[in-house]
Image 1 (spheres, rainbow, N blue to C red):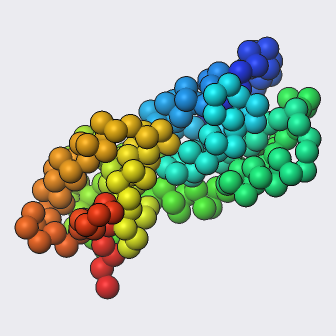
Image 2: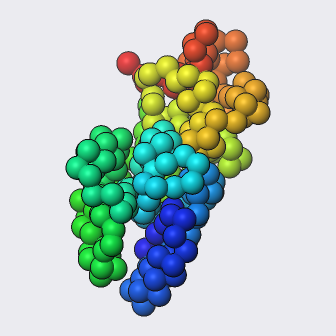
Amino acid sequence: MRVLLIDDDTALAELLVEYFTPHQTTVTHATSGRAGLELLAGDPFDVVLLDVMLPGDDGFVVCRKIRLSHRVPIIMLTARGDQHDRITGLDLGADDYVPKPFNPRELLSRIRAVLRRTAPAQAELERLEVGDVRIDVPAHKAEVGGALLTLTSFEFRLLVALARGAGEPMKREDLARALKGGEYDPSVDRSLDVHVSHLRQKLGDDARDPRRIRTVRGIGYVFVRPS
């Protein structure tokens, strides 16, 4: 099991690494929301442990950004036991909420419980199908009409983001955020047209009259669901 800990408490990170490692669980530590989002954009994790009190963007902001492009289970950690904080975190998409201080054994049990609860939904979301386009997210594979597609990492992430919102127009800004793990990068926004063009070609989409990925003027793009 792979755990991403987003918390500026290095002593806590060392404690969890020491306790979790013998339980076949690896802990990757990020001390800020930005660092955590960058790690999520590049590697798959089974669960995120997210502290509320972070430098820069707090845990609630980071939780919202994670949910823009990831379905990974999130457990919020905080020294503040305020019920309002707990409700806020759950409303933003967190799957559980653990107040500090906590026993590492209890936290591991809570992680396992969350994974059992979310496993069916995770499995369904990680294998996407839109018409004859099929995407196996964990295997990083996509095919159209049974033929395997050769995609760059960026094109694959773009295809996944569009497929997850299939049938609904996606704003350029939201796509750019999804492709950068929740952070808005203007350079990604500016390059979207080029990457969409390449993706259309690989999907066999007509450049003049695309039927799969259509441009929504003034908004962005939509991955069309066949009627």
